[in-house]
Image 1 (cartoon, rainbow, N blue to C red):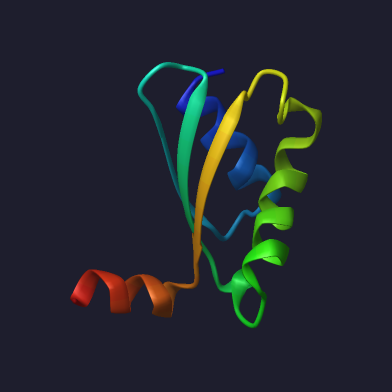
Image 2: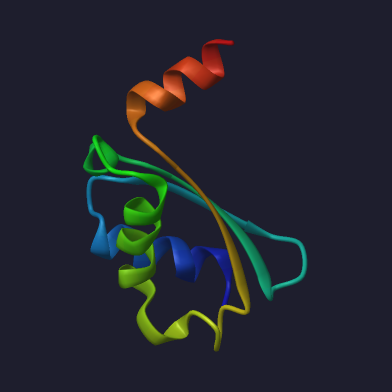
Length: 81
C-alpha cells in the first residue's frame, strides 16, 4: 500500500479529519490524524477509531503503523510551541 492509499482510507472513515501519512520503505507507515472526533477520547480509543477505518489491512498490507492522533486544539498548541 502507498501512503496516499492509507490517507484515502482513513479520510473515508473519518471524513472531517486532516490526514498525513508517510513511509520510508512502503511497509512501515507514520500517520498524523487531526480531527475534532478525538476530543475527550483517550489515546487507545483514538487509535481504535483509526484502525477501524483500515480494517484487516492492519498486519497484512500495512505491516506497521505509528499514529499521532490529535484534536485541532492539540495540534495548534504543538505547532505554536
